[in-house]
Length: 255
Image (cartoon, rainbow, N blue to C red; front, side):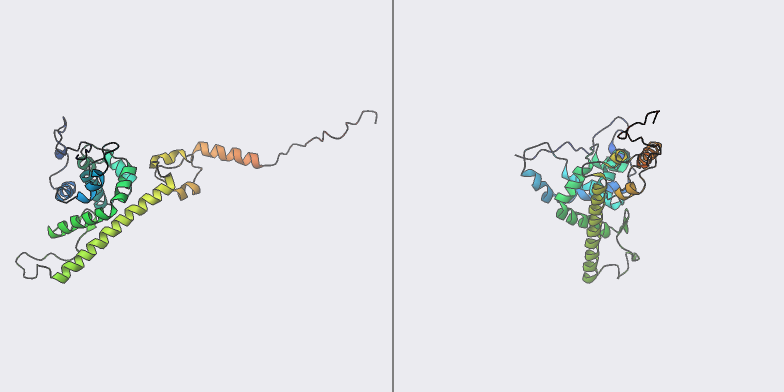
């Protein structure tokens, strides 16, 4: 029995605009990433879900892969920031086709399929390099000058291709490590299952997106926080009132 996934219809019609693909210009990077991922073999990811028939239908692996690869290409490494972009950024919404996986789902998907994603991302960069793209979002693919088509030096030697592949693999590894570090830092600052905006409740006047160290440094930034600090200081001060020793006998007027 084939595994059932949640609906993922990239050509789903809407009233305004009539199609998701009308939201962005034709040469947008999101479409390039989508077209490349559609050509990749995702059996290494899909096979994991095919073995498990219990539970709710998962998000489509192809959609999740597109979101992660596009996010890393444009410099978005935090899963919490990805979740926010899925609600606010047109390119992310187009790639997700209306789906909005939360940050924990995105983070767990990356961790579960890290090895396969690294190979897929490497293929995306390799295809981009072969297509002549010098830059994929913020990821620079080649710093050398592009030679003319008629040049006999345009074709790369085997040694050059091998070196370029090593460089692309190192770049992919660096990006995935950066994503892991971003999620680990935010999990430590906010809590593993809490979004960044929940930081507002942890300290009076704390900023959304602040780190744990920033909260410790600047916890008293709101008026409410200043009042709490004043009350705490008053409780620490010794009282100036003269205390009466109720254990000693009260002297009489005649004595």
